Image (cartoon, rainbow, N blue to C red; front, top):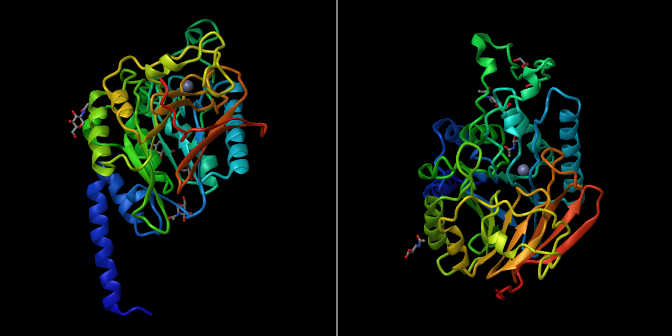
Length: 401
Ligand SMILES: *[C@@H]1O[C@H](CO)[C@@H](O)[C@H](O)[C@H]1NC(C)=O
Ligand SMILES: *[C@@H]1O[C@H](CO)[C@@H](O)[C@H](O)[C@H]1NC(C)=O
Ligand SMILES: *[C@@H]1O[C@H](CO)[C@@H](O)[C@H](O)[C@H]1NC(C)=O
Ligand SMILES: *[C@@H]1O[C@H](CO)[C@@H](O)[C@H](O)[C@H]1NC(C)=O
Ligand SMILES: [Zn+2]
């Protein structure tokens, strides 16, 4: 039994710790959310302090689910069927790899194809295989997640508007009062994020600093060893690469935020850094294999051109200036799954994981394995049928370019 003095001392210390951590976490949660978070923050390990833990001597495994594109063509048979298939892909990967963490790498839903007011219903379905297994995760936005509905032209021909099969408890056009049901403005990034966080105590996603809006999913997570929380194994940066309701770009404000944050929490570049966002940037074009010459690239799909962000505003320059940056991971191009060396780092695609979205290439997920002392970052692709390929060591020195 602990004396009351011990208990209040512990309470005081944990309060002080929490205050310090709050100052250091860059999220600016909405009021409603911070209330919810406060309610769950007394539980053991929560996403509150943005820290993930790895046991000493063991590795930390991350699965990347890219471009799931839930919610397409809900009025047909094949739309809902492909979401069921995407759930199967994720379930297979999760059961075979048993990851410690999952990253939803954008285009979780195809909002421009969702004729209901609330895309969070589909977002939630996409998250469910991970949540059901008790695995924590984080998400970033892609260009499809907050798009407004695009009315199909054929609905205005003789076929007319088909009867819509909406998910349980979603309001379909005409069902709700005041005609509100027929205006599908899309679900904003803030609403999507708010709903993800409100319903999920395993989500490590964040709103990001308010001054970076309309860009939302900008935050950093710390991976620490359980035996020594002071020794950080890696920092994982999540950035919103835009698209949908605003241009496909990582803004100058985001670059400055990264500059400030990385210099503050990792001033000597001692701790390795891993970067996640949805849309590849221009540097991907410079390393993309051409004419079947794959150079030092490792992957299995080289069948598309890189669709890069619209502009560079300085983010890449910052990454190039930090020896601690090991790799960048993106989705967006469903027909590419390579990793290529670029200056001090690797530029990697994930693997198209969803049955939604363009392309019928077999589905899979990129897996990352982080080990500590010494640090290593290994990756491979796990396919839906269990096949594993394209293994690559991303922590190896790549200074070549
Ligand atoms: C949208 O859906 C989510 C998930 O089902 C739910 O939590 C949220 O309350 C809904 N929001 C609105 C405005 O209906
Ligand atoms: C749908 O709404 C009803 C009544 O509001 C509720 O009882 C039920 O649990 C809801 N179902 C789902 C799947 O959210
Ligand atoms: C998280 O929420 C689920 C219900 O969604 C609940 O069963 C579980 O106990 C919660 N876990 C923690 C650590 O609070
Ligand atoms: C990054 O921060 C340093 C100072 O901490 C500053 O000298 C440099 O100009 C900044 N770079 C950019 C691109 O903002
Ligand atoms: Zn996509």
